[in-house]
Length: 178
Image (cartoon, rainbow, N blue to C red):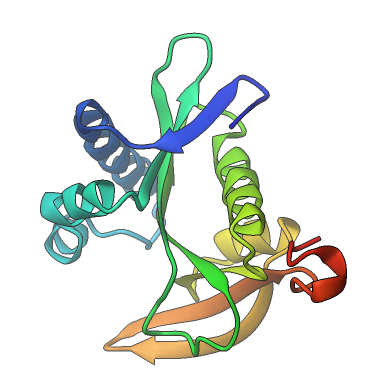
């Protein structure tokens, strides 16, 4: 999938160091700005490299490449379930979305590509969670059509569940989300 100078595709083994580098760069970017989102030590404890390797092997880790040089500009883990959510309709769940601080529009493009993929897979919505205290990030997701569903506390992680939905597939539309 390609648009606006990017392509979105499943991660390959050779992409992994770039993905890890993006995560470290984003953590540093947030630390420099006083954003309490991903603590470096805790992040790598909860989401070690093996987590991403397994996601790649299971075709759940996607990368966003810049078209002009094929550099990895972003990444996301996209799953078909999430224990924080009641699975009452076909959905895709976004996790660990990261975009290079220098890649303007990369985060928006990842969201757009995830939605397009979910629609092709006959899903009715995209779901994610984000830390409750990051107002700017919550506004960002709202601006991209993700509505607040509920707040939660998962072992001290205070988050907001957000969802972007569309008309579910029906027999009249051939089972394809519109």
